[in-house]
Amino acid sequence: MALLGDDRRTLLRLMLDRAFRVGDFLLTSGRRSPYYFDGRLVTLDPVGALLVGRTLLEFAREDKVEMVGGPTLGADPMVTAVALCSALDGGPRVGAFIVRKGLKEHGAGGEFAGPPPHPGQPVALVDDALTSGGSLLAAAERVAAAGAKIVALYTLLDREEGGREHVEAAGYSLRAIFTRTELLAGGDGGAGDPPPARAG
Image 1 (cartoon, rainbow, N blue to C red):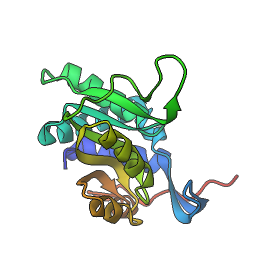
Image 2 (cartoon, rainbow, N blue to C red):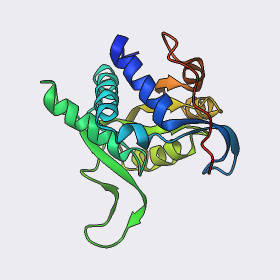
Image 3 (cartoon, rainbow, N blue to C red):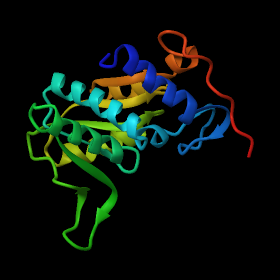
């Protein structure tokens, strides 16, 4: 785990206070869940962006990837944070790209925003939360079709609802900063119970 001590507790507290809710929620997949996580409330927070960027950059350095990308919109602030952190830490630059929802047919066109990955280039794909794994796997299919080498998939939160199994069955390695179990337990050091769902 890249985050240790105070940094890990700070990120955990941000996630619990701002982004994680317990209740009854309808997910994008059409499934209902007793938990809801809005990762952008963390990844678009100044401190959250910094801590997520640092952690994913450490993953990327360990995995020797040259670019990080992922499906819009969840991955947008995450890949930006990784690229920015890589420009500040004195190590090799890690580029960023975004996998569009569909093929852009106007302007320069293309499936990616930002510089596209090159054939054979080692990349990692990210998303803010992993439920079934469908979004990341769909993005991975398009990135693989472009010829890039997908080294690993990263997520801020593994919701532990089958996504890891789907990702690994497809032949990919998954690294999660946190799991749902850790959030429900309050993480290391007992940061507290997750807040209930808000009314309305």
